[in-house]
Image 1: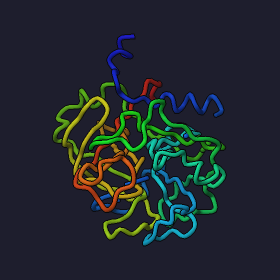
Image 2 (image 1 turned 180 degrees about the vertical axis):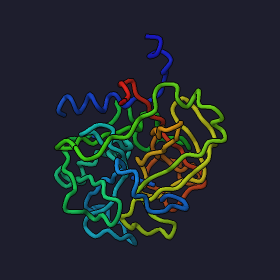
Image 3 (image 1 turned 90 degrees about the horizontal axis):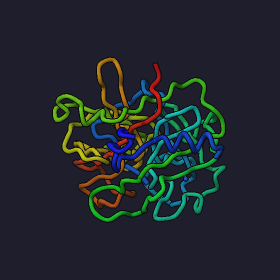
Image 4 (image 1 turned 30 degrees about the horizontal axis):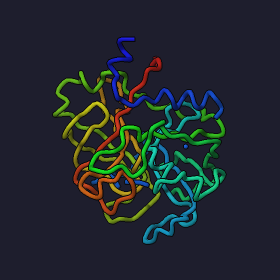
Length: 267
């Protein structure tokens, strides 16, 4: 019980895995990013371009948000990716039009994209939060129709990881996502870049430089010894609208929603 009390307002991903077991609801480019072929547990959610966004490549299959495989059927992303503009994503597209892919390049969409069985958001999530910080409940999951057997899920940071991390103010984190590049082109490539610590709270972690449109939900990673942990995912750019939803361009700073887990860590 002590561990649970210490968690306070922090967001847990345990609900995501429970949702999957129960059978079971946009977005920001990596500044100075390069193509990433290493982190194969990072993927993209693809939907038809029903919002009529122009100036981007991708054809009918549109990169909507990024995310990570945290369990064989659970794809972690931001809740506002699944409730854009205050409405469930399924108000705009049917669930059978939502696909997830873990390919590193040229996705739009690939023939091996994975189908989805359900989506869920953290209880209490409020779309379009006011101010510069994301809603602390901005956590969403996509439940895949089938298990992914050829990818090892990401390791989530354990409780207290960031709070006790030595010299956190000097740490460098990795940012990954499928969003726009710095020429504001949606290439369909998974990009990786680095950023530095700015500030930390119980529910978010701020760093700079940030990300751009359609990287939302993508992971922030931090290495501790031989292990790389996901410590959060991209939520909002504080130097732009600050509404936690689609913003224009790239931000000088980025706010990440913290994630951690109560589940046993893999050996």
